[in-house]
Amino acid sequence: MKIWVDADACPAPIKDILFRAAQRTETQTTLIANHTMRIPPSPYIDFYQVEKHFDAADNEIVKRLTPGDLVISNDIPLASEAIDKGATVLSTRGEKYTLSNIKARLTMRDFMDSLRTSGVDTGGPPAFSQQDRKQFADELDKLLASQA
Image (cartoon, rainbow, N blue to C red; front, side, top):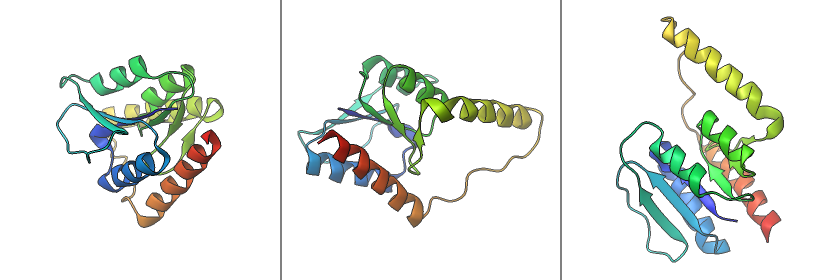
């Protein structure tokens, strides 16, 4: 299993958790983004920069992943495509996207997008919390342990 990270919008605390997990479990982890970023020196951690086009990072992740890989992303359309290719997807808040919940997530995303397009202020997600970090770390550990 490889880990693919949609790194453009991935919070720094989640990247730190991923860096430690990659080292600890010797799991190849690749961050993909449209801007440069620092990664720690490690044989298990890579960075790939894509052009600054809409969905360029998402498209690169889908192109490179193989069944059984893990994708870290909050992007619902990317999650759907990754699941269709046989990957496991985990949001940065520790929510596992699956075949049974991704269609409902896509529908809700599209509905909220329609509201925003109509001028309705839908607000945003709550602030990223310590509980979110813990939830992510716990779910990541479960997924990595199941591969051991």
